[in-house]
Length: 502
Image (cartoon, rainbow, N blue to C red):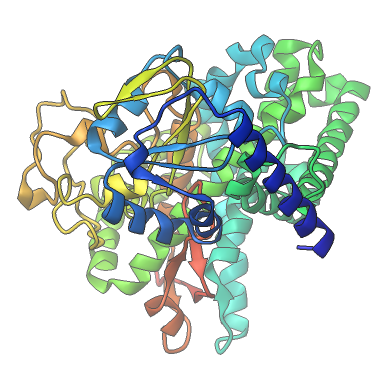
């Protein structure tokens, strides 16, 4: 950070401190559990370390003193359940989203109220998922063949696993949402843009600085947003110039165009940025970490291959397969129990550190009244590593979720300790897709992409660790970002080899 920016931050901090002393806030907080500005600096540097320490030393409810705002952390299971089930008029998802994305999207783009009716059916509607399936398969085959050829031509070399999966998932998302031609032309650039967004918006410092503050983060975010908008506008203009040539495309942008007739085209870039970013970030990391554990655990790999080969579904996903065969094969993949369990365990084990809501009125949390206009954070990571919910929560178990639907309490199936989970609190804890009125609209799309790609990579190929497998053995999460599935600290080398026909 430049010295001038540091001086401005110091002056602004001092001024805000004086203002607060002269005009103290009228809101009251549980004072015995507060931590101060120096703790926030630690939070900004290493949120994982901060949350772990604060939870152990302060308990499940505490607040940060950031001069003019005091975000509250509510980390108990009861608070976690309240977080997902509260009405918008109490704990607001929308207001928190506006604040979190204020440097990326406008208020209108966050809500896109005039196009809300086109979000869920366009992304996760049954017919739309069927139309996205062939693209997911084609992109996976293309990249897998490329990786296999590179592994064959240079057996002593090693590919970067997380980078490979990022390229694949970026192409799938862009192909499904904007079109295959756009993905081929701009995939590498867009992956870098979205990576920049992910790193920058997860910085807690953005929550306390106004957008006009001369911080390099704001300048970088503005430049990234402008470039994204320019790319999407160029694609929109091309479709406006020749509507008949693009009318039959299956991507989400064309769905918007066909349904909206360009009436609100100024909102298209924001909508597609939101769904692409949401689908790309967590899907990439979830698939990558699943492969890391498959490379680590030979027994897990063997059991997965038995399930995949025994399903007989791979033959319906060949390039010559009919549309009906492809749809049937993808549907069958979604029902494979061990494949589903492995991905759920990745989502549990590598949960994001925090999610946020905003109190619209005084709200009772864990016996304390949280004032109006307060940010309230919960931690999926702490919840999903709670011994009260899971046996051996810090151990990765690929079969932990076999035969159990952890997302609902009314399935008729009771979890027991032998299943790796405690009884009675399942619906309060494991919620990888959120819950209530703000459940993730891209859940079905992401699950289809995750399961289809992982199935294909194992059905026809053999992923192996590169060299002495040190990168795989030493793979640990990088917790520098607050939101989303963590990345890997360091490089994981791998190769992809073609399996011999059985």
